[in-house]
Image (cartoon, rainbow, N blue to C red; front, side):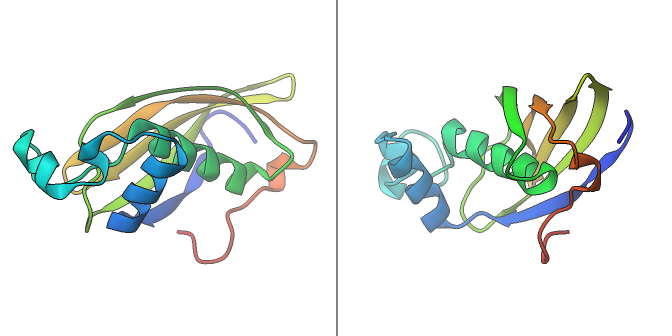
Length: 139
């Protein structure tokens, strides 16, 4: 593995269930993440994904690639375009740095509106991480 290597893409369908379950799992009970009418009253066309769910999906993307023995040391993300039900988010990553058993990966998750999430993650790598790959069915 070296700087410039691209991770395989991961396509995630954005379902109403995923949005609500992620909000509940992260104890984010704000109505805009589970109540479509309340979300519309606040100016959103529908419920939308919270940052903690997005953070978890970014973590999943990285551990799916590098394996369950990698350790996420730092994840710094920023949200952009909301993830609404019925859309699809495609996560992509590019290794920007590798040194001393760690890698820095630039992550971008895009949906039909643009970039939903951008950021970087620092990952401690197991010895066999160079052969990491996503599970079958991921792009």
